[in-house]
Length: 376
View (cartoon, rainbow, N blue to C red):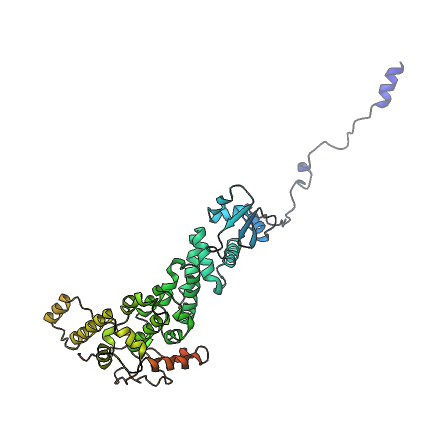
């Protein structure tokens, strides 16, 4: 009796007044619709972006690149993307690179480029960056550097020589020294007046003197420039006389001057006599006279062209013409008669150039010209 009474006390009566229905069946329709709220979540970075930001912060580097006394904390994976040289570390946390082939400042700029991919590299370090890119075999960076070096408004004349000089000091990076020498025009004689010119190796002198771009008043100035370089370290440079004089267009020298060189000595001109008395130079002078004669009598006929073909003769291309009002020996017009001047007068003009303001040579205006010859 007691158990039955307890069960009845715990039971609740059924609710008959509220039907058991879903929210979707409520009188006013569905109450299970999401509110149209715009949810603005912060954009999630891709793994590439995350890695790029991590590299850019340069936190927790795992490779120490050593160049001479300079040390650069780097990310091994980032370097591995661009170069195989990282394998030289052989699993250690240190990579030694040769300081004579990998300039420290150039590597610093190259690594910065790897981090952010920017192309606005430091202009004064382009040669160093190119040396690094060449050593590390980073073709993309080589192309970026050449993109800037090919800009004519940035790297012609004196700037071209600065690039050539840096390339020479770094072991002739990609023959950049000789290539840049051939961009020099009106800056030529100012360069010849400098210590840098007489210190050039023979390869660079020849690359410079054989250029069609040189701007001078007469080919005698190119010839005297060759004399200046040769006699500066005489007799050590005597062996280069033939090599250097081949770059001078001897047939463009004035007729009277050629005759004087063939009959030395010339009074008070020891440097000229030293060169002109050499047997190999006498051969150059004879060939120059012959070339002048052929050119003077050229009539453009087929027979004459055949004669030139027999002697394998090509008329020399004249240099660009300039006239400087401070040079007493300069003629004002290309076809004007050349006043006689010799090596000592040329040196006096170089001394004047040494005392001018920077960039004075930029006022000179080069022009192309044609040369007429008088036969010897």
